[in-house]
Structures are given as structure tokens and as C-alpha cells.
Image (cartoon, rainbow, N blue to C red; front, side, top):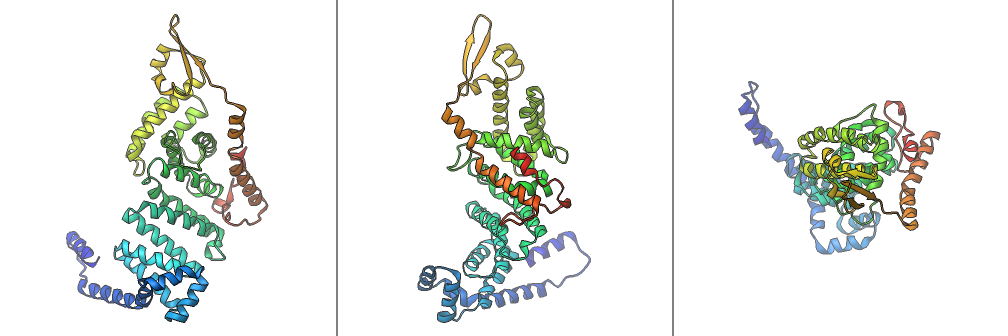
Length: 402
């Protein structure tokens, strides 16, 4: 890193002289010092017999006692793993940093340092492109933020800020995992009551990615245990309408035009602008074709749902691809009138019951959260949503449910 900075200094022809030799010597000395402090713990980690004993220990308290009694390892030496991993991160050695922080998290009893280590490991996994490992870290960080255990994270403002950072960092992970797992994981996290309120409070611009993920994953294979995408679209339409006063762009506007105003002509025009926005967006540019294809499919679906009969000429003029929705509807062509008659399949009572009750868990959680936020009672894992801008309009989870 010193060599890199020295090269930049030469390129910019900086007038101020720097003693890069001293910087390099200081960095090397610091590295050796931290490595020496972490060496006792690293030897234990590299010993298969010691690792087997630690795995059979059951919990951190028993493992700490084992380390003290058999290997003379105390908490300060365990913390040396954290500091050495942090220094490896500053050097750009993200693989070794992630490895050191991983072992530190297995042994450390400190909640404060553990949260910091989770952030460092998440960043290291992102830089290394280890997306599955990064997804695990996103889930671990989410659990640590929602259950602060009396740490500084328990303060409402700190919790709100941490959730805001996690929402932004997770974009790197979700959109690199693909339209199936990645977009569905994004929808599940962003639409949970605590994180939805965080978006509404401090980062409404993330609604673009929420809407885009719903459109991109519309017809993607759904991972096991996820809700139908149609529910996401309905929820998002209400959210976009509520937040239009503080954030709107062509992507969110497309959803509003189509599912709130049912204006397919306006949606077609908006899609043209939204396509250019998606293609120039850092996270969405790789999904531009999927977004446009699924958006056109949605337009065709809505057009067929609001018409019982469609003149073929009118459909062509409206740029509706009737073949795209042939699987969703039973279409009979009336040759004498050049019309398509739309016959919608009727849902069975069982399917109707499943569709109606599918969102009960989410809505119940949203109602509980909104009620406790209104009365000011703390809720485990759901604090801090009233922070920021004086908590204006925070009981919005009730509105979503309504």
C-alpha cells in the first residue's frame, strides 16, 4: 500500500515531500508486531486436535475456559486476532483478513468487537467476490443489529444507522447472486417491517432497487420458502404511492402507472426512460434485459386483465405481445370480428384461501410493530424505527397492512 501511495504521489507530482521509506518501515514493524501477538491463537487454530476439542465444547464460555486452562490463551490474545485481521484489511489482504475475523468470531465473547468484525468480514467477502459467504454475513449482521444485547447498537439512532448501512452494503451481495436467490433475498429483507421502515425513514432512494428486484425476479425460479412475487408487487405499489412525495424515479413510476393507475400507454412511455436508467445504474445494469422483458410481460398481463375482448389491431398498436400471456389466459380468436376473447381461469376455493392467508405472518408482524411503535414500548429486534426526522409518519406499517 505504501508503494501504491508512492506511485500516486509521483503521478500527481506533489510538492510536499514524503518519507515513504519510513512509512514502509513503520507498516512492516506494525505488521510483525500484530502477527506476533496473534501467533499463540493461530497455532491453536491450526492444531487439528485443538480444533476438535473446541468444536466439542458446545459454546463460547466453555471454549474460553478450555483455551485458558490448556493453552494459556486469554481474551487479550483472542482480541489480537481481531486487530491483526483489521490490519490485514487495511493492507488490502482481504482473504487473510476474512479468515482471521472468521476465527475471531468463533472465539470472541465481546459483542462490540463482534459487530465490528462482522462488518470487516462482510467487506472482505465483497472485495473477494465471495457472495455466498457475504450472504451469510448479511444475515449474521442483521441478527446482531436486531438483537444488540445491551451494546451501543441498542440506541435507536445507532440501530437506524446500522440498518441503513446494511441495506446499502447488501446491494453488492444480492445483485451478484442473480435474479433468483439474490433478488428474492433482497425482497424478503427489504420488505420486513424493520427494514421497510428504515427505507422510508432514511433512504427512500432504495425503493428503486426494491421495485427493480420485484420486476426482474417476476418469472425467475423461486427458492423454497419464499412468497409469491405477485404479493410483492401489490405491497410495493402501495409503498411507492405512499413515498411518492419524497422519492420517485422512472423505475418506481413505471410500477405506479401500471398497477395503481392501470395506464398501459403511460407505462410503455415510462418503460423507455426506465430502461435507460437501469442500463446506467451500477447495480442494475447487468439485469437490464431481464428488467425490460419482464416489464413488457407485466404490461401485457395488465392489459389483458382489464379487457375482456381485445381487437388484434388495437393490441398491436398498443405494442402488446399477446403471445407472452397466452399461458396466463385462455384466448379464443373470433375470426369474424378479428377479436380475442379473454377467458380468465377461476381460482379454486383452496387456492383463494392460500392466496388470502399467505401474507398473514408478515401483516401480523407489521401490526405488532406499528402498535408498539405508537405506544413507545420497546420490542426486541425492532427498535429505532422512529428515529430520524422526528419519527414523522413511522406507523406506516399499518398503512401497508391496510
